[in-house]
Image (cartoon, rainbow, N blue to C red; front, side):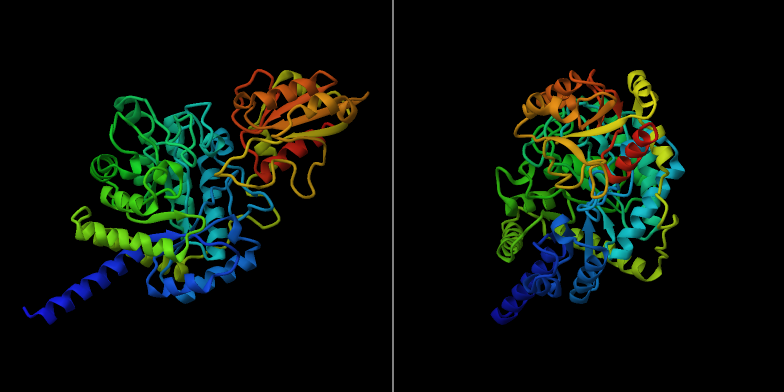
Length: 503
């Protein structure tokens, strides 16, 4: 072979490597319109786009944005975190019209769960999004988990598995790929992988019987994708977090569980993934371990994407990453892209529920609430003035900034707001704002058992009059009178109706 031929082969291989590397990346960008530089990358073969709350303003705007993305790359995989509850990118600014997983688990009607999955899929499809980064298949087995909570269908493995399968079937029937998360199970952690590296200490037998059951069900239901978690599970791999573990992604997920779809990483800008090594190195490690589609995070620059592509190419040249592993990842992403493209032309995405009706009735949602005898007595004591207190929950990166429960635009108006930075305001202003003859005060917060300052504020308010303390999470505190198991707009509407019917 002549030197010219060798140079040509090297150039062709470099071009193929760049094409495959771009094809497995799913970055985000800032703003509601497609930047020119991002469109150029899409035309060059960038495989995916992840939309976040900052990219979404209205249904018409999202549809225009996704149309621009498809114009640049007709086979782009457009994804978003739409879980149909507290985590809702389509409804980040106005609050989700869906109940959320924990409420669905308590209703425990698989047909209802399947319908919600389909309605979420229909909304996504109509907006041009064809990969839902949902359902959450994690089991809420640790009450101190700061990131899963009501995103889970519950604490029972068999129930979570059944609802995970039903939601998966529903969303994919609408022509939107499901993505069961966060493999191999983020439920038994007490840290958030957005800001730390959580560790699950359960033994292998417990993990297999508990955390893996919903993922088995999702695979049996045909989920197109599964998302990894940046957690360490020493019983499965003592040396690497799941996203970087060939034992977890290869031996367990591909081998033992038989998953043949696309493995998606959780965002690589999270501390649990790249906090120690940086995103380019994390990308190489993830692909080497068995990941296919790399979610990069909310805002990735052109230079950062170039750095990731270069890191993958250098790793192949140094034999740290097999060339056929990158090619396999690119082929799997291409297969998913072709499926989503076909669905855009074939699937009827009309909603099964009339636009004027909630996907689940308010009465059904209210019936899933846990109501103490004391709260029931106050609600049933005859017409009374109701005053609302909002105890702002601690920030949650997964949820982001969104209306909290009944406090959406046009909903409840708080007589007193207790901010995270000043829980003591409850001691100073409670009596002036919420006490009074014939008044019942409804104090709304989330997961008081994880927030001593919020719990103390609720106690201070309770001391000055008739009060119902509402926890919009999984309630583990003795001071809670009513638990809703979710804080979406729809759940907030059900709470408003329940309280209003007795006011």
